[in-house]
Structure formats: structure tokens, C-alpha cells
Image (cartoon, rainbow, N blue to C red; front, side, top):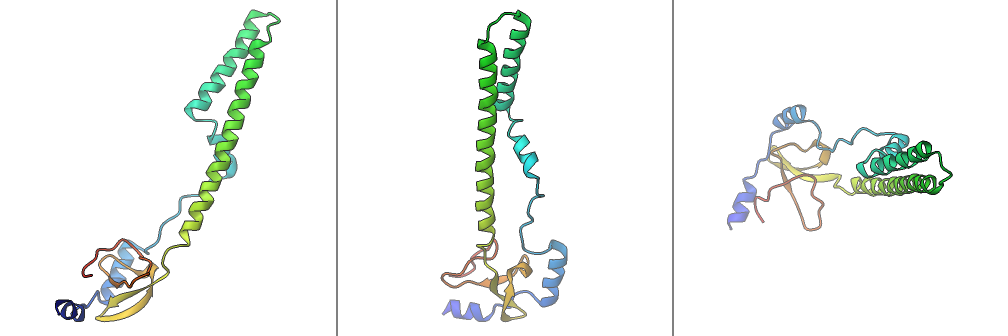
Length: 154
């Protein structure tokens, strides 16, 4: 009995208050990060600590060959192998990072697009972008939640 009395008393925000909060806080949507070019993302793979350590080790291998002036090709071979490892590792990391970004892009379309909200004492169907802090929404079984919510009654 208490639930029925409480649900009838729900007023929600007024339209004017909701518009005011929308102006202050903005739309209820995630702001995507600034896109970076693929070339910069690829170069980033070679600026990590491990990659830089291997590059420095490779350079030191080449320096030892230049200083010794011997026909010792072991250090040249080791330096080339280290550079190949850095390149292959960076390429694999770049490819895996791109796959992860595509998966996250797929998740962005999985959110709710419309919801039922109390405004001015009546239920309305709104685009979730226009929800504001303090809105009271009605959720039924199977609904996708449009934002962070607190459950008032269940």
C-alpha cells in the first residue's frame, strides 16, 4: 500500500528546472577523447620504457663494433635482432590496441536511447541526452539504464 501512495505522489522536476540544469551541466552523454592519428599511436609504441631500453641496448651494440674495429659481427647481429624485436613488439601492440578501440566503439552504441521520466508530475518519454541530475526515471524489467541512478523504490 505504501508503494502505491508514494508512486502517485512523484512529481519529478519541473520542465523549467530541468532546462536550467541542462544548461548548467550539459547533455547526458560521454565526451569522446580527442582522436589521434594512427601514425602517432604507432610511434607511441616505441616510446615505452621497455622499447627504449632495447633501443639503447641496440645502439650500444653498434657502438661497441665501431669502437673495437674488429671483424666481430656478433654485436651487429645482436643489435639488429634487438631492433627487430622492438619493431615486432611495437607492431603487435599497435594492432591489439586498435582492436581494443574498435570494441570500445561498439560498446558506445549499446546504451539506452530513450527512457521514461517524471516531469511536471507526469510520465514522459525522453531522449537520454536530456536527462539531468535529479530526474526521477521509471525502470521496468529489461530496460537499459540511461545514467547513474539511485533506486528509490523497488
